[in-house]
Length: 166
Image (cartoon, rainbow, N blue to C red):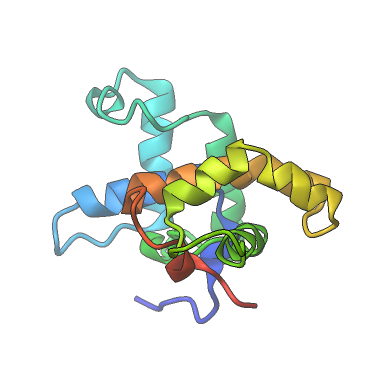
């Protein structure tokens, strides 16, 4: 199986990334989970009463995930390993938010993902848009992205470990 030489996880929404990670983590160790495997799973959830749907209720499984998967399969092929599409780092806009929290002069200790989320909810993202650090359209997905990172790594994970430098 050929691994993708570029970081293709940057092309995936936080919801799809979390869904892929869940499926990979639940697979048998010898089972290779490809984009086609994920596509079949999402199609099954959308078209049938699927027993695992109850266990995956926190994922928003809808047609947009299928559209996103179709686009990825068209670009990378059905046999691309799904694990390559799991986001482990913050996007560039979220990295700017984390950096702003880290550089807050009033902070006495390194911020966690939970602290970054709380700062965002308390208006940090809007302030960064006003300062020109973020574009207005970048703010739309940041809360979902930080929530996905918290779901996977916990609210007490050090935020600086997820900064993506590009």
